Length: 358
Image 1 (spheres, rainbow, N blue to C red):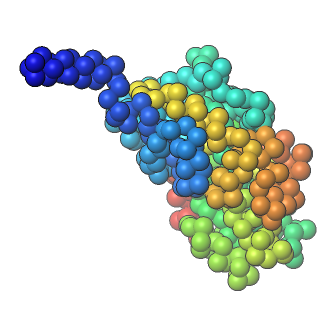
Image 2 (tube, one colour):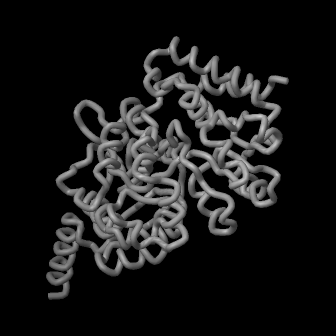
Image 3 (cartoon, rainbow, N blue to C red):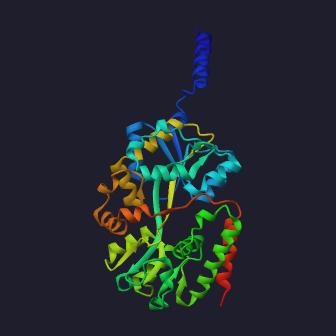
């Protein structure tokens, strides 16, 4: 009798295991690789309570996401959050993502312009590989005393702010200066000679501008300190930093440049060997609800693609955002397209020459 019961229990155990019903986390766990601030503890706790799905968070950045998913052929995570310009090239080369099934995404709660920008940036062979999540821009942080002088990137070279300027020696500075000089670097991405010509002109401008620069900032905290003390009155930097400073000192604010702020979108992307797509889509639709998305903004300082979420964002951040971005400024954002191979190497050489110039 005992032997027969044992065999019966063994058979049931084998059947349960074969059906994936062992109670292991696999079917009820979401493995999310994301950026800091994008999955606040209170949001995770509410999602887990409402869905019964445990969320396992891995904090990362673009390079690390690509490295991890490339090493596993798209396994190890159910949902990732790469930037929109870091998907197509990677997908074409390493095949680590799968197309988004937009029938499973509640696009009614997303800003149509963000959906379009993301689809445009992540389309490959007729499929889309990203859903918009969190977005932000690079632009200008200025003190009111120089706000009339510095309205575009190249105004950082104006003699009126000599010695009071800071920006990074990174590719956004090259791109921003190019737009402010009346060129369109994004349109030249696939024309190497034209792009080299644009970069040569920007290089010359940045070398001429060196005497205006107090220091080239390398970290956000460093820049904020320079602006707080008044050592720097105008800088090229991220909107979230400007809004943070504005909350401390209303005389400092983020300004969308006349030639357009440079926009990035961090997306939701499904790794090719995701083991819980259902949980991934549930998370996307959950966190893009306006009131939930507002919590992400309050934590990260960046706004989301959730329609109407700014109504629920804390008042100081919401008001600073609305001052920086009226409808015209939003429509003038220059969204980063996918970067073709070889461009970043070329840009690095330009930046090295600017750094080395006397």
